[in-house]
Length: 478
Ligand code: NAP
Image (cartoon, rainbow, N blue to C red; front, side):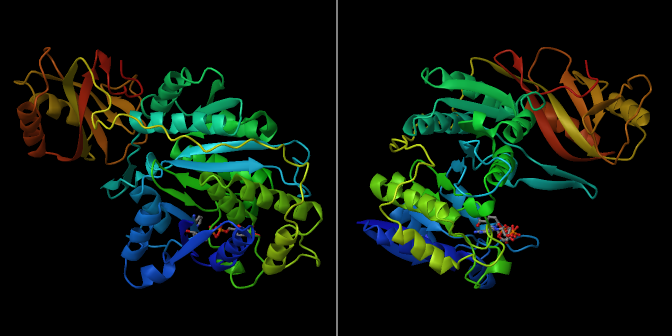
């Protein structure tokens, strides 16, 4: 018997998770459901993570979660309980299948849409590392690791293998963010060589959005960074009928959390009208994860048969004739054993989770040298005066002031006398004028001198790894 941590969640959670539990139980698969709490009531009790200790203990034990949506309090300070769960348990792969459903009217009807978005789930802008650098300037750090990229790319290819899919697209914004988004592109190109039977293609993410709207049937698997994946997967659910039809899974090496893409839809709660398909198909993904392939197939086919018979919930059928969530649930169970031609039968296998070297210094270099320092200043000083001041401060140091930048654009020395719309925030770039190391004592001396006249709030060491600059140039910087 498999034990699963079951979290009903908030809003419509009780109805959609309740329906899913009833349908899974009806297949005869033996599951011991360990019901646990998370979400709104937990926040109200003053637990800032929204996830109590008992729930964490249960997940550590069962390593399998089926959950409903959790409300995120809108305010300052509270973190999303969903994000907490995904991160605490390092469920680095967010899987969101997008498939056309029979009988659901969309502009794409008959196009046989059938692709999976594999979204990196723990890094990127969603690491939540944010600072107000000045009262009017905010910063969010976009941290992307080579190890995280390799893990998600391996996962995407392994998913393609497990589901018999032929192509993996990697969608990035590597043309602009050459280091962070470029990290995923480079990892993709390297890892793809280990999967010669699967076609690999890189696509710029904005073009990917465009192509998904024009020819969604051309996609099979799309692997992408966290925020890109968040946006593309909602686009995907829009193609096939909306959030009521968008299942999902968060998978890590050890723990798997299955949940729909949608939230708690509070307006629909306790009305017995909501569509349970998204959570139910998340449950189907869970059944495949525990190798209950037959039960998964039975449910999936019964869902298709129910829709083919014109039995819908209110989100699909606005007029009278829509059935309640509970009647829809029973209608699916009544159709166990029916099969549908709507979805090509796949020979699903369990997805292999690739294990990478555990080294914390995952990428090793032959050589590395710190060659300079970027210092971020809060100032409204005229840039010519600021430039002259900073130059005077380093006159007796082995440093040059390479440039001053404002919002990514070089403003000193000025480019053709043009200045962008300046704010109280700039970056001064210092480079060593000899080939020695920009060591800590020199950095500290520089910060001390600048701090005597200006307010600095952020620094960034400039490194060269194996001969390659580990920092970008400002617009206009030579
Ligand atoms: P939402 O709950 O997903 O609802 C947005 C709209 O999508 C709903 O008003 C609804 O109606 C439609 N919808 C959602 N689920 C549906 C279903 N099962 N069947 C049919 N239609 C469905 O998004 P939200 O209102 O932005 O968020 C509400 C709360 O949920 C927030 O606190 C948010 O933080 C949280 N949330 C949690 C998760 C999670 O737990 N993973 C994910 C997202 C949001 P119409 O389209 O008819 O208007």
